[in-house]
Amino acid sequence: MDKIVILTGAGISAESGLGTFRDKDGIWTRYPIEDVATPEGFARNPALVQDFYNQRRAQAAKAQPNAAHRALARLQADYAGEVVIVTQNVDALHEAGGARGVLHMHGELARALCNACGHRWDAPEVMAPADPCPACGRPETRPDVVWFGEIPYHMDDIWTHLGGAGLFAAIGTSGNVYPAAAFVQEAAAAGAHTVELNLEPSVTVSDFAETRHGAATEVVPDWVD
Ligand code: BJW
Image (cartoon, rainbow, N blue to C red; front, top):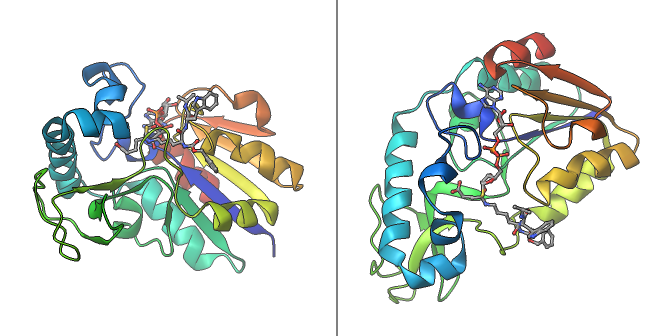
């Protein structure tokens, strides 16, 4: 059976009430990227960044998985081959919808990271810049998310999965951020059929063999079933 690799972005969680980044009224229209999503921004003003992620963590804690998250979990459970879900999202809605083994390439809101020693642990609901690391005690804790200029997680596994994919689908992502935006080309080069499922054409739409445009809660269950 062909391996299916699925990349998801903020659009899959939009109908669960979590904001996207680059849409009208998106997160980056309210917060400067360089202030809240770069290591330099964190070094300049850790309290601002912790506050931004504390708000995002509180919103994510209230959100419920939607029909698109559940459809992908169903696909994983019912398909005889392997279905790998790679998400750029830091929420846990795939897991709450029943998905397994999700690769969070941009980290997780629910985890904390020590900038000093690299230790990771479950984040408290509210983090503060001077929280001591439980392993080394240094006050250099941060959300365990991947900011611009940092290397996304699980990349060796992801490239291997893309190289062996028979089908690649990108769902709810604008295609603006690398390396995720290049996954379609990697999968196509490996011979995979490629599908975009998004509200509107992404900036990489011309790289896809097939496109289905509409709300994730409609197009994803249709595509899966
Ligand atoms: C719906 C919907 C509905 C709405 N139904 N759809 C110049 C050229 C090329 C690259 C670079 C460059 N300069 C710098 C770079 C690299 C840089 C980059 O890509 N910059 C670009 C801006 C140019 N990338 C990095 O720095 C990355 N690291 C890196 O490249 O390391 C080098 C390396 C990599 C690999 C191997 C070795 C070395 C790190 C990127 C980190 C991104 N971090 C963020 C924040 C994470 C934490 C957090 O959540 O706060 O990740 S930024 C933000 O963007 C977040 C997202 O995961 C990411 C992608 O956004 P996404 O998901 O696509 O959301 P939107 O809002 O853009 O799109 C939503 C889509 O949904 C839209 O299309 C809507 O239409 C659709 N939609 N409602 C279906 N109901």
